Image 1 (cartoon, rainbow, N blue to C red):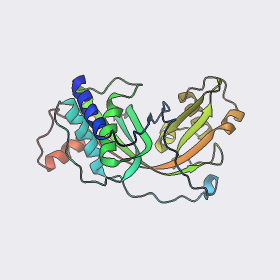
Image 2: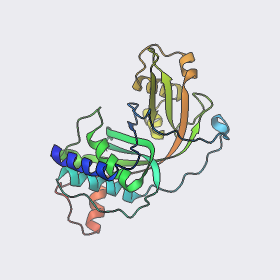
Image 3: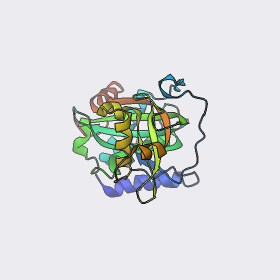
Image 4: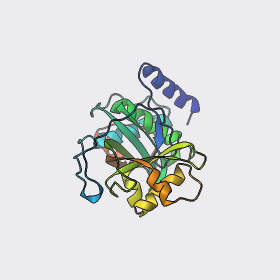
Length: 260
């Protein structure tokens, strides 16, 4: 992939957005930098624990979002002009784009934003940012494309929790704010599916998130109770590269140069 091509694309996007508020982005495994984002207002009228009432999610995520992310990445890796304006909703939501690779779907990149973005520009930006700018991984290469799966997560229903266990496994994503052993404020997040995919209980999830967020000392119950936790929900949709190519063939598009 040409670095200059990626930089040109990214610079053009930033010029289009220069009069808009720039969202802070984060990866889903805890390396976060959204300390300066605008505050989010949360609902306070939920029941705690497993008796909590769960608000229904807006039906936003659709397969075309995954198609769009693949098209954006495919074009970038093949030095082609990006796709045009997609047909799905352009409402504003916080969002994450996740790339996984192989049959075991190993994480390959996951970055998103808790600031609401218009979906067209947000998915275009984070399809590339998560593919090339996740500091935990080398940039995705063209040879890897046929083995990729993409997931789009649309985040909704943010609520301040009443304690570090005031959320449900497999239902809520969590974002924590805490002080390190040096007194520094840190934040970290896991999307809703992370804990169940790893087989963690709530305490294991919190402890892992503290480590991912940079806490290095002994984790105590007192520390866990001091955490400020925000829970949220996510509507997720995913697609493998093979499905993406099949969609293109049905549409009669001769697009991209990578063979499955």
